[in-house]
Image 1 (cartoon, rainbow, N blue to C red):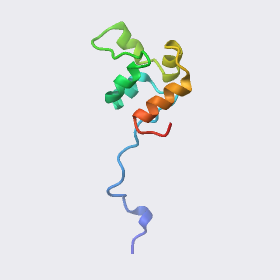
Image 2: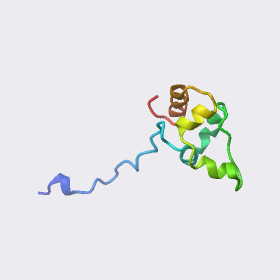
Image 3: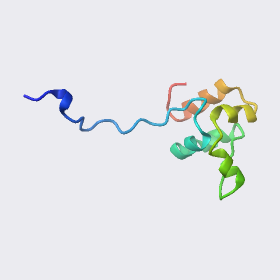
Length: 89
């Protein structure tokens, strides 16, 4: 008889999805959930193409900072983005 704690969990859920919070980088959200870029654009967070200074800067832009820059209440921004990616608001 084997101890169940030593048997690998076959068929386990894949790695957990990116948890969106105030410290999550906008670029990570767009990379993980690219299809929600249109939702983020409603807040003024535009898609960035090509190799530009703006593309470089978005890698450091957090959800909290994006909300502040675009004058959107953080809780409203988080709720909308979390809902769009299927997380609890």
